[in-house]
Length: 82
Image: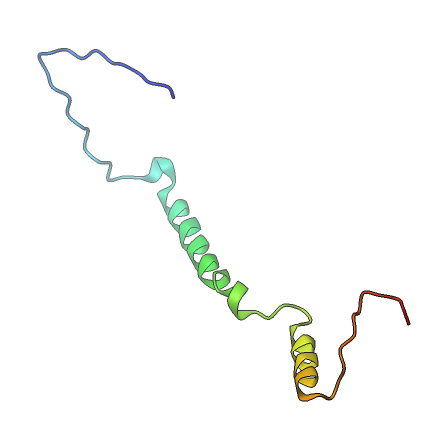
């Protein structure tokens, strides 16, 4: 961690400068638009992990229903024994 020590004259205490009212040197308008766009993107994508089904989820659901109903028998799919 870096630290900086400043010696100030004892005759005048430190006073914070006034907050700027003109932010044009920092292009505040563009920064605000970028922040709005980022917030909008976060709102759109924040629930996708929960709401968007994964590829193959519907087929897997159908297979599970068939297994539970007894219409299909289970066998391991990762073997080549047959």
